[in-house]
Length: 502
Image 1: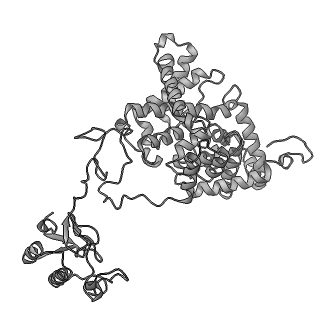
Image 2 (image 1 turned 90 degrees about the vertical axis):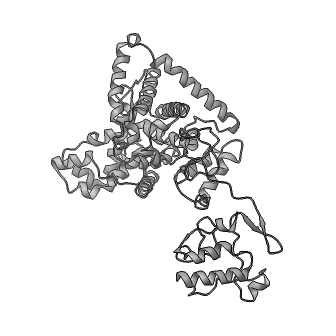
Image 3 (image 1 turned 30 degrees about the vertical axis):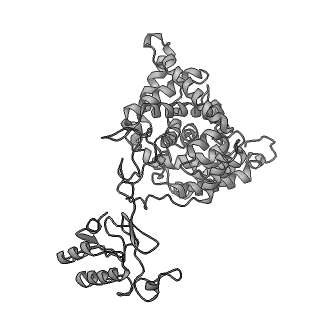
Protein backbone atom coordinates (compact mmCIF):
# COMPACT_ATOMS: atom_id res chain seq x y z
CA UNK A 1 0.00 0.00 0.00
CA UNK A 2 1.42 3.43 -0.94
CA UNK A 3 2.09 6.03 1.70
CA UNK A 4 -0.53 8.31 0.18
CA UNK A 5 -3.16 5.63 0.82
CA UNK A 6 -2.23 5.28 4.46
CA UNK A 7 -3.18 8.73 5.69
CA UNK A 8 -6.73 10.06 5.16
CA UNK A 9 -7.54 13.74 4.90
CA UNK A 10 -9.06 13.61 8.36
CA UNK A 11 -7.92 11.48 11.23
CA UNK A 12 -10.03 10.78 14.26
CA UNK A 13 -9.36 12.15 17.74
CA UNK A 14 -9.75 10.01 20.82
CA UNK A 15 -8.99 10.49 24.46
CA UNK A 16 -5.42 9.39 23.88
CA UNK A 17 -3.65 7.64 21.06
CA UNK A 18 -5.30 5.29 18.65
CA UNK A 19 -5.25 4.09 15.08
CA UNK A 20 -5.83 6.32 12.11
CA UNK A 21 -8.76 5.31 9.98
CA UNK A 22 -7.42 2.46 7.88
CA UNK A 23 -4.28 2.12 10.03
CA UNK A 24 -3.35 -0.70 12.37
CA UNK A 25 -4.46 0.05 15.98
CA UNK A 26 -1.54 1.50 17.94
CA UNK A 27 -0.10 3.75 15.18
CA UNK A 28 1.14 6.98 16.74
CA UNK A 29 -1.27 9.27 14.91
CA UNK A 30 -3.79 11.52 16.62
CA UNK A 31 -7.33 10.64 15.61
CA UNK A 32 -10.42 12.66 14.60
CA UNK A 33 -8.61 15.99 14.18
CA UNK A 34 -8.56 17.99 10.88
CA UNK A 35 -5.13 18.01 9.22
CA UNK A 36 -4.12 21.14 7.24
CA UNK A 37 -3.70 20.68 3.48
CA UNK A 38 0.02 21.35 3.51
CA UNK A 39 0.52 18.82 6.29
CA UNK A 40 -1.41 16.24 4.24
CA UNK A 41 1.10 16.65 1.42
CA UNK A 42 4.04 16.23 3.83
CA UNK A 43 2.47 13.17 5.42
CA UNK A 44 1.84 11.58 2.05
CA UNK A 45 5.31 12.27 0.69
CA UNK A 46 7.43 11.59 3.76
CA UNK A 47 8.91 8.13 4.38
CA UNK A 48 7.69 6.56 7.60
CA UNK A 49 10.33 3.93 8.24
CA UNK A 50 12.72 6.23 10.17
CA UNK A 51 11.95 6.82 13.87
CA UNK A 52 13.47 10.31 13.65
CA UNK A 53 11.28 11.19 10.68
CA UNK A 54 8.19 9.95 12.51
CA UNK A 55 9.14 12.04 15.55
CA UNK A 56 9.45 15.14 13.39
CA UNK A 57 6.15 14.48 11.62
CA UNK A 58 4.39 13.80 14.91
CA UNK A 59 5.65 17.08 16.39
CA UNK A 60 4.39 18.92 13.31
CA UNK A 61 0.96 17.30 13.52
CA UNK A 62 0.68 18.21 17.20
CA UNK A 63 1.68 21.84 16.62
CA UNK A 64 -0.82 22.23 13.77
CA UNK A 65 -3.75 20.40 15.35
CA UNK A 66 -3.32 21.19 19.02
CA UNK A 67 -3.61 17.53 19.94
CA UNK A 68 -1.14 15.75 22.16
CA UNK A 69 -0.63 12.26 23.46
CA UNK A 70 -1.32 11.29 27.06
CA UNK A 71 1.04 12.74 29.64
CA UNK A 72 0.87 16.45 28.57
CA UNK A 73 2.90 16.07 25.41
CA UNK A 74 5.38 13.53 26.74
CA UNK A 75 6.17 10.70 24.36
CA UNK A 76 4.79 7.25 25.16
CA UNK A 77 7.02 5.16 27.46
CA UNK A 78 9.68 3.11 25.74
CA UNK A 79 9.89 -0.65 26.19
CA UNK A 80 11.81 -1.79 29.26
CA UNK A 81 13.93 -4.23 27.31
CA UNK A 82 14.62 -5.34 23.77
CA UNK A 83 14.30 -1.77 22.41
CA UNK A 84 16.38 -0.29 19.61
CA UNK A 85 19.26 2.12 20.20
CA UNK A 86 17.18 5.06 19.00
CA UNK A 87 14.44 4.21 21.49
CA UNK A 88 16.89 3.96 24.39
CA UNK A 89 18.37 7.35 23.52
CA UNK A 90 15.03 9.09 23.98
CA UNK A 91 13.54 8.87 20.47
CA UNK A 92 9.98 7.63 20.03
CA UNK A 93 9.59 3.87 19.96
CA UNK A 94 8.85 2.47 16.49
CA UNK A 95 5.16 2.69 15.65
CA UNK A 96 3.12 -0.31 14.63
CA UNK A 97 3.60 -0.70 10.83
CA UNK A 98 0.84 0.65 8.63
CA UNK A 99 -1.36 -1.78 6.68
CA UNK A 100 0.44 -3.18 3.67
CA UNK A 101 3.92 -2.70 5.15
CA UNK A 102 5.90 -4.79 7.62
CA UNK A 103 9.15 -4.08 9.36
CA UNK A 104 12.13 -6.15 8.32
CA UNK A 105 14.88 -7.21 10.66
CA UNK A 106 17.10 -4.46 9.30
CA UNK A 107 14.60 -1.74 10.21
CA UNK A 108 13.44 -1.05 6.66
CA UNK A 109 9.97 -1.55 5.26
CA UNK A 110 9.07 -4.51 3.11
CA UNK A 111 5.79 -5.26 1.36
CA UNK A 112 3.32 -7.57 3.10
CA UNK A 113 -0.06 -8.83 1.93
CA UNK A 114 -3.01 -6.65 2.96
CA UNK A 115 -5.44 -8.00 5.58
CA UNK A 116 -8.40 -10.03 4.28
CA UNK A 117 -11.40 -7.85 3.44
CA UNK A 118 -14.57 -7.86 5.49
CA UNK A 119 -17.39 -9.30 3.43
CA UNK A 120 -20.72 -11.05 3.80
CA UNK A 121 -23.02 -9.57 6.46
CA UNK A 122 -21.94 -6.44 8.26
CA UNK A 123 -19.63 -7.47 11.05
CA UNK A 124 -18.94 -10.95 9.68
CA UNK A 125 -15.30 -11.82 9.16
CA UNK A 126 -14.44 -13.56 5.90
CA UNK A 127 -16.46 -14.25 2.81
CA UNK A 128 -19.71 -16.21 3.12
CA UNK A 129 -19.61 -19.74 1.82
CA UNK A 130 -23.33 -20.34 1.50
CA UNK A 131 -23.54 -18.93 -2.03
CA UNK A 132 -26.09 -16.23 -1.09
CA UNK A 133 -24.53 -13.40 -3.06
CA UNK A 134 -26.42 -10.15 -3.33
CA UNK A 135 -28.64 -10.98 -0.36
CA UNK A 136 -28.70 -12.35 3.16
CA UNK A 137 -28.67 -16.07 3.72
CA UNK A 138 -31.69 -17.55 5.52
CA UNK A 139 -31.11 -18.09 9.20
CA UNK A 140 -30.28 -21.65 10.05
CA UNK A 141 -28.06 -22.02 6.96
CA UNK A 142 -25.25 -19.60 7.81
CA UNK A 143 -21.81 -20.93 8.50
CA UNK A 144 -21.03 -18.93 11.62
CA UNK A 145 -22.66 -17.01 14.43
CA UNK A 146 -23.97 -13.54 13.73
CA UNK A 147 -21.67 -10.79 14.97
CA UNK A 148 -22.76 -7.29 15.98
CA UNK A 149 -23.15 -5.04 12.97
CA UNK A 150 -20.38 -2.57 12.14
CA UNK A 151 -18.15 -3.96 14.87
CA UNK A 152 -14.41 -4.15 14.20
CA UNK A 153 -12.83 -7.58 14.14
CA UNK A 154 -11.02 -6.90 17.41
CA UNK A 155 -14.28 -6.07 19.18
CA UNK A 156 -15.86 -9.29 17.92
CA UNK A 157 -13.39 -11.38 19.88
CA UNK A 158 -15.23 -13.82 22.11
CA UNK A 159 -15.45 -13.07 25.80
CA UNK A 160 -13.22 -15.10 28.11
CA UNK A 161 -14.58 -18.57 28.79
CA UNK A 162 -15.83 -18.91 32.35
CA UNK A 163 -15.18 -21.87 34.59
CA UNK A 164 -18.80 -23.04 34.29
CA UNK A 165 -18.71 -22.87 30.51
CA UNK A 166 -15.48 -24.85 30.49
CA UNK A 167 -17.02 -27.48 32.79
CA UNK A 168 -20.05 -27.82 30.52
CA UNK A 169 -17.80 -28.24 27.49
CA UNK A 170 -15.76 -30.90 29.28
CA UNK A 171 -18.86 -32.84 30.31
CA UNK A 172 -20.46 -32.66 26.89
CA UNK A 173 -17.46 -33.29 24.64
CA UNK A 174 -14.40 -34.57 26.50
CA UNK A 175 -15.73 -38.08 27.08
CA UNK A 176 -17.52 -40.55 24.87
CA UNK A 177 -20.39 -40.91 27.36
CA UNK A 178 -21.80 -37.91 29.23
CA UNK A 179 -21.94 -38.26 32.99
CA UNK A 180 -25.57 -37.30 33.50
CA UNK A 181 -25.34 -37.06 37.28
CA UNK A 182 -22.56 -34.52 37.04
CA UNK A 183 -24.46 -32.70 34.31
CA UNK A 184 -27.53 -32.42 36.55
CA UNK A 185 -25.48 -31.03 39.41
CA UNK A 186 -23.90 -28.44 37.17
CA UNK A 187 -27.19 -27.53 35.44
CA UNK A 188 -29.08 -26.96 38.69
CA UNK A 189 -27.60 -23.46 38.98
CA UNK A 190 -28.34 -22.58 35.36
CA UNK A 191 -27.09 -23.56 31.92
CA UNK A 192 -25.18 -21.21 29.59
CA UNK A 193 -27.33 -20.23 26.63
CA UNK A 194 -25.03 -21.84 24.03
CA UNK A 195 -25.18 -25.25 25.74
CA UNK A 196 -28.83 -25.18 26.89
CA UNK A 197 -30.42 -26.90 23.85
CA UNK A 198 -28.09 -29.91 24.07
CA UNK A 199 -28.28 -30.06 27.87
CA UNK A 200 -32.07 -30.04 27.91
CA UNK A 201 -32.20 -32.78 25.28
CA UNK A 202 -29.78 -34.89 27.29
CA UNK A 203 -31.61 -34.39 30.60
CA UNK A 204 -34.92 -35.30 28.94
CA UNK A 205 -33.30 -38.44 27.46
CA UNK A 206 -34.10 -37.30 23.92
CA UNK A 207 -30.41 -37.38 23.07
CA UNK A 208 -28.40 -40.44 24.14
CA UNK A 209 -25.49 -39.84 26.49
CA UNK A 210 -23.23 -41.73 24.07
CA UNK A 211 -21.73 -39.15 21.71
CA UNK A 212 -21.42 -41.62 18.83
CA UNK A 213 -25.17 -42.25 18.76
CA UNK A 214 -26.37 -38.63 18.87
CA UNK A 215 -26.33 -37.81 15.17
CA UNK A 216 -28.04 -41.04 14.17
CA UNK A 217 -30.66 -40.59 16.88
CA UNK A 218 -31.47 -37.03 15.82
CA UNK A 219 -31.78 -38.09 12.17
CA UNK A 220 -34.06 -41.01 13.01
CA UNK A 221 -36.35 -39.09 15.39
CA UNK A 222 -36.70 -36.12 13.06
CA UNK A 223 -37.59 -38.40 10.17
CA UNK A 224 -40.14 -40.22 12.32
CA UNK A 225 -41.84 -36.93 13.14
CA UNK A 226 -41.70 -35.80 9.51
CA UNK A 227 -43.47 -39.03 8.51
CA UNK A 228 -46.14 -38.46 11.17
CA UNK A 229 -47.18 -35.07 9.77
CA UNK A 230 -48.80 -36.38 6.55
CA UNK A 231 -50.10 -39.45 8.37
CA UNK A 232 -51.92 -37.60 11.17
CA UNK A 233 -52.18 -33.88 10.37
CA UNK A 234 -52.29 -33.42 6.60
CA UNK A 235 -55.43 -35.50 6.12
CA UNK A 236 -58.94 -34.56 4.92
CA UNK A 237 -61.29 -33.33 7.64
CA UNK A 238 -63.80 -36.02 6.70
CA UNK A 239 -61.32 -38.71 7.76
CA UNK A 240 -61.12 -37.37 11.33
CA UNK A 241 -63.44 -38.59 14.06
CA UNK A 242 -65.72 -36.17 15.90
CA UNK A 243 -63.38 -36.26 18.89
CA UNK A 244 -60.36 -35.48 16.74
CA UNK A 245 -62.15 -32.58 15.06
CA UNK A 246 -63.16 -31.16 18.42
CA UNK A 247 -59.59 -31.48 19.69
CA UNK A 248 -58.17 -29.78 16.59
CA UNK A 249 -60.64 -26.89 16.92
CA UNK A 250 -59.54 -26.34 20.51
CA UNK A 251 -55.88 -26.32 19.48
CA UNK A 252 -56.62 -23.81 16.72
CA UNK A 253 -58.29 -21.56 19.30
CA UNK A 254 -55.54 -21.86 21.91
CA UNK A 255 -52.42 -21.48 19.75
CA UNK A 256 -53.01 -17.79 18.83
CA UNK A 257 -53.35 -17.06 22.55
CA UNK A 258 -49.96 -18.59 23.33
CA UNK A 259 -47.43 -16.25 25.00
CA UNK A 260 -49.14 -12.97 24.10
CA UNK A 261 -46.02 -10.99 25.09
CA UNK A 262 -43.71 -12.90 22.70
CA UNK A 263 -43.92 -11.67 19.08
CA UNK A 264 -42.45 -14.90 17.73
CA UNK A 265 -45.63 -16.82 18.52
CA UNK A 266 -47.84 -14.32 16.72
CA UNK A 267 -46.39 -15.30 13.33
CA UNK A 268 -48.41 -17.65 11.16
CA UNK A 269 -45.53 -19.99 10.30
CA UNK A 270 -44.73 -20.56 14.00
CA UNK A 271 -48.38 -21.02 14.90
CA UNK A 272 -48.66 -23.66 12.19
CA UNK A 273 -45.72 -25.53 13.74
CA UNK A 274 -47.39 -25.41 17.16
CA UNK A 275 -50.69 -26.67 15.77
CA UNK A 276 -49.03 -29.64 14.10
CA UNK A 277 -46.93 -30.79 17.03
CA UNK A 278 -49.75 -30.39 19.58
CA UNK A 279 -52.28 -32.22 17.40
CA UNK A 280 -49.91 -35.08 16.57
CA UNK A 281 -49.03 -35.46 20.27
CA UNK A 282 -52.73 -35.57 21.18
CA UNK A 283 -53.53 -38.18 18.53
CA UNK A 284 -50.67 -40.41 19.71
CA UNK A 285 -51.65 -40.05 23.39
CA UNK A 286 -55.38 -40.81 23.47
CA UNK A 287 -55.43 -41.41 27.26
CA UNK A 288 -55.25 -37.68 27.83
CA UNK A 289 -55.54 -36.04 24.44
CA UNK A 290 -55.04 -32.31 24.19
CA UNK A 291 -55.65 -30.29 27.37
CA UNK A 292 -55.63 -26.50 27.52
CA UNK A 293 -52.26 -25.35 28.83
CA UNK A 294 -50.15 -27.81 26.85
CA UNK A 295 -49.59 -25.09 24.25
CA UNK A 296 -47.80 -23.01 26.90
CA UNK A 297 -45.49 -25.88 27.83
CA UNK A 298 -44.17 -26.13 24.27
CA UNK A 299 -43.01 -22.49 24.10
CA UNK A 300 -39.80 -22.66 26.22
CA UNK A 301 -38.69 -25.75 24.31
CA UNK A 302 -39.40 -24.16 20.95
CA UNK A 303 -37.53 -20.93 21.78
CA UNK A 304 -34.48 -22.73 23.19
CA UNK A 305 -34.13 -25.11 20.23
CA UNK A 306 -34.70 -22.27 17.78
CA UNK A 307 -31.88 -20.32 19.41
CA UNK A 308 -29.53 -23.20 18.58
CA UNK A 309 -30.71 -23.36 14.97
CA UNK A 310 -30.00 -19.66 14.32
CA UNK A 311 -27.07 -19.34 16.76
CA UNK A 312 -28.62 -16.57 18.80
CA UNK A 313 -29.60 -16.14 22.42
CA UNK A 314 -33.09 -17.26 23.38
CA UNK A 315 -33.97 -13.67 24.36
CA UNK A 316 -33.20 -12.32 20.87
CA UNK A 317 -35.14 -15.17 19.24
CA UNK A 318 -38.39 -14.00 20.85
CA UNK A 319 -38.72 -11.06 18.44
CA UNK A 320 -37.09 -12.49 15.30
CA UNK A 321 -38.72 -12.69 11.89
CA UNK A 322 -39.61 -16.32 11.27
CA UNK A 323 -39.77 -15.68 7.52
CA UNK A 324 -35.95 -15.60 7.51
CA UNK A 325 -35.73 -19.17 8.76
CA UNK A 326 -34.85 -21.93 6.37
CA UNK A 327 -37.45 -24.66 6.00
CA UNK A 328 -35.03 -27.34 7.18
CA UNK A 329 -34.12 -25.42 10.34
CA UNK A 330 -37.75 -24.81 11.24
CA UNK A 331 -38.69 -28.43 10.58
CA UNK A 332 -35.91 -29.68 12.85
CA UNK A 333 -36.90 -27.28 15.64
CA UNK A 334 -40.51 -28.44 15.39
CA UNK A 335 -39.48 -32.11 15.58
CA UNK A 336 -37.14 -31.57 18.53
CA UNK A 337 -39.86 -29.63 20.37
CA UNK A 338 -42.36 -32.42 19.77
CA UNK A 339 -40.12 -35.16 21.15
CA UNK A 340 -38.96 -33.17 24.18
CA UNK A 341 -42.54 -32.13 24.98
CA UNK A 342 -43.41 -35.82 24.85
CA UNK A 343 -40.64 -36.63 27.33
CA UNK A 344 -41.76 -33.82 29.63
CA UNK A 345 -45.43 -34.80 29.62
CA UNK A 346 -44.59 -38.47 30.17
CA UNK A 347 -43.41 -37.52 33.67
CA UNK A 348 -46.62 -35.65 34.56
CA UNK A 349 -49.19 -37.40 32.39
CA UNK A 350 -51.66 -37.91 35.25
CA UNK A 351 -51.96 -34.11 35.35
CA UNK A 352 -53.99 -34.36 32.15
CA UNK A 353 -55.88 -37.63 32.37
CA UNK A 354 -59.52 -37.84 33.48
CA UNK A 355 -60.05 -36.07 36.81
CA UNK A 356 -56.47 -34.72 36.67
CA UNK A 357 -55.36 -36.51 39.86
CA UNK A 358 -51.80 -35.26 39.54
CA UNK A 359 -52.88 -31.62 39.68
CA UNK A 360 -55.18 -32.24 42.62
CA UNK A 361 -52.36 -33.93 44.49
CA UNK A 362 -50.00 -31.01 43.89
CA UNK A 363 -52.57 -28.42 44.98
CA UNK A 364 -53.19 -30.35 48.20
CA UNK A 365 -49.45 -30.51 48.88
CA UNK A 366 -49.08 -26.78 48.26
CA UNK A 367 -51.85 -25.91 50.73
CA UNK A 368 -50.42 -28.11 53.45
CA UNK A 369 -46.94 -26.73 52.90
CA UNK A 370 -48.23 -23.14 53.06
CA UNK A 371 -50.10 -23.88 56.28
CA UNK A 372 -46.86 -25.14 57.81
CA UNK A 373 -44.43 -22.43 56.63
CA UNK A 374 -46.75 -19.39 56.79
CA UNK A 375 -49.76 -20.02 59.01
CA UNK A 376 -50.81 -16.34 58.98
CA UNK A 377 -51.02 -16.33 55.19
CA UNK A 378 -52.92 -19.61 55.16
CA UNK A 379 -55.38 -18.29 57.78
CA UNK A 380 -55.92 -15.05 55.87
CA UNK A 381 -56.79 -16.90 52.68
CA UNK A 382 -59.11 -19.14 54.65
CA UNK A 383 -60.89 -16.18 56.28
CA UNK A 384 -61.34 -14.56 52.86
CA UNK A 385 -62.88 -17.73 51.46
CA UNK A 386 -60.08 -18.30 48.96
CA UNK A 387 -59.52 -21.95 48.10
CA UNK A 388 -56.10 -22.85 46.79
CA UNK A 389 -57.44 -24.34 43.58
CA UNK A 390 -58.66 -20.83 42.63
CA UNK A 391 -55.10 -19.74 41.83
CA UNK A 392 -52.89 -22.82 42.21
CA UNK A 393 -54.64 -24.90 39.55
CA UNK A 394 -53.13 -22.72 36.83
CA UNK A 395 -49.71 -22.83 38.53
CA UNK A 396 -49.68 -26.61 38.28
CA UNK A 397 -51.42 -26.95 34.92
CA UNK A 398 -49.28 -24.30 33.16
CA UNK A 399 -46.17 -24.70 35.33
CA UNK A 400 -46.10 -20.96 36.18
CA UNK A 401 -45.97 -20.06 32.48
CA UNK A 402 -48.69 -17.42 32.98
CA UNK A 403 -47.03 -15.96 36.08
CA UNK A 404 -43.42 -15.44 34.92
CA UNK A 405 -41.76 -14.00 31.78
CA UNK A 406 -40.51 -16.54 29.27
CA UNK A 407 -36.81 -15.96 29.99
CA UNK A 408 -37.43 -16.44 33.72
CA UNK A 409 -39.25 -19.69 32.93
CA UNK A 410 -36.33 -20.91 30.84
CA UNK A 411 -33.96 -20.34 33.76
CA UNK A 412 -36.42 -22.05 36.12
CA UNK A 413 -36.60 -25.07 33.84
CA UNK A 414 -32.82 -25.48 33.94
CA UNK A 415 -33.27 -26.43 37.58
CA UNK A 416 -36.48 -28.42 37.20
CA UNK A 417 -34.95 -30.60 34.47
CA UNK A 418 -31.98 -31.40 36.69
CA UNK A 419 -33.71 -31.71 40.05
CA UNK A 420 -34.63 -35.35 40.57
CA UNK A 421 -33.75 -38.84 39.42
CA UNK A 422 -36.20 -38.93 36.52
CA UNK A 423 -34.64 -35.80 35.05
CA UNK A 424 -37.80 -33.79 35.60
CA UNK A 425 -38.64 -31.84 38.77
CA UNK A 426 -42.09 -30.77 37.58
CA UNK A 427 -43.89 -33.23 39.84
CA UNK A 428 -42.08 -32.78 43.15
CA UNK A 429 -39.80 -29.76 43.30
CA UNK A 430 -42.32 -27.60 41.46
CA UNK A 431 -44.56 -27.66 44.54
CA UNK A 432 -41.78 -26.12 46.64
CA UNK A 433 -41.19 -23.50 43.94
CA UNK A 434 -44.88 -22.56 44.06
CA UNK A 435 -44.82 -22.40 47.87
CA UNK A 436 -41.81 -20.10 47.81
CA UNK A 437 -43.49 -18.00 45.12
CA UNK A 438 -46.65 -17.57 47.18
CA UNK A 439 -44.71 -16.85 50.37
CA UNK A 440 -42.69 -14.10 48.64
CA UNK A 441 -45.94 -12.10 48.32
CA UNK A 442 -47.27 -12.99 51.77
CA UNK A 443 -47.08 -9.47 53.25
CA UNK A 444 -48.91 -7.94 50.30
CA UNK A 445 -51.58 -10.64 50.19
CA UNK A 446 -52.38 -10.19 53.87
CA UNK A 447 -53.20 -6.51 53.26
CA UNK A 448 -55.78 -7.33 50.57
CA UNK A 449 -59.32 -8.59 50.81
CA UNK A 450 -62.31 -9.45 48.67
CA UNK A 451 -62.22 -8.76 44.96
CA UNK A 452 -58.90 -6.92 45.21
CA UNK A 453 -57.31 -10.04 46.68
CA UNK A 454 -58.75 -12.29 43.98
CA UNK A 455 -57.47 -10.01 41.23
CA UNK A 456 -53.99 -9.94 42.77
CA UNK A 457 -53.85 -13.75 42.96
CA UNK A 458 -54.68 -13.93 39.25
CA UNK A 459 -52.11 -11.34 38.16
CA UNK A 460 -48.95 -11.20 40.27
CA UNK A 461 -46.58 -8.25 39.58
CA UNK A 462 -43.82 -10.36 38.04
CA UNK A 463 -43.65 -8.97 34.50
CA UNK A 464 -40.16 -7.55 35.14
CA UNK A 465 -38.75 -10.63 36.87
CA UNK A 466 -35.39 -11.83 35.66
CA UNK A 467 -32.52 -14.07 36.67
CA UNK A 468 -31.97 -12.50 40.11
CA UNK A 469 -35.56 -13.04 41.21
CA UNK A 470 -35.60 -16.60 39.88
CA UNK A 471 -32.35 -17.43 41.69
CA UNK A 472 -33.86 -16.16 44.95
CA UNK A 473 -37.03 -18.16 44.34
CA UNK A 474 -35.07 -21.34 43.69
CA UNK A 475 -32.96 -20.82 46.80
CA UNK A 476 -36.09 -20.54 48.94
CA UNK A 477 -37.59 -23.60 47.24
CA UNK A 478 -34.43 -25.60 47.88
CA UNK A 479 -34.52 -24.73 51.59
CA UNK A 480 -38.17 -25.81 51.80
CA UNK A 481 -37.46 -29.07 50.00
CA UNK A 482 -34.56 -29.79 52.34
CA UNK A 483 -36.77 -29.23 55.38
CA UNK A 484 -39.96 -30.96 54.31
CA UNK A 485 -39.39 -33.35 51.44
CA UNK A 486 -38.41 -36.23 53.72
CA UNK A 487 -40.48 -35.13 56.72
CA UNK A 488 -44.09 -35.87 55.75
CA UNK A 489 -45.37 -35.91 59.33
CA UNK A 490 -44.56 -32.21 59.64
CA UNK A 491 -47.19 -31.51 57.01
CA UNK A 492 -49.99 -33.70 58.32
CA UNK A 493 -53.02 -32.13 60.03
CA UNK A 494 -52.51 -34.58 62.82
CA UNK A 495 -48.83 -34.80 63.80
CA UNK A 496 -49.32 -38.45 64.70
CA UNK A 497 -50.75 -39.29 61.28
CA UNK A 498 -48.52 -41.65 59.31
CA UNK A 499 -49.81 -40.40 55.94
CA UNK A 500 -47.08 -39.09 53.70
CA UNK A 501 -48.00 -35.91 51.88
CA UNK A 502 -44.68 -35.11 50.25
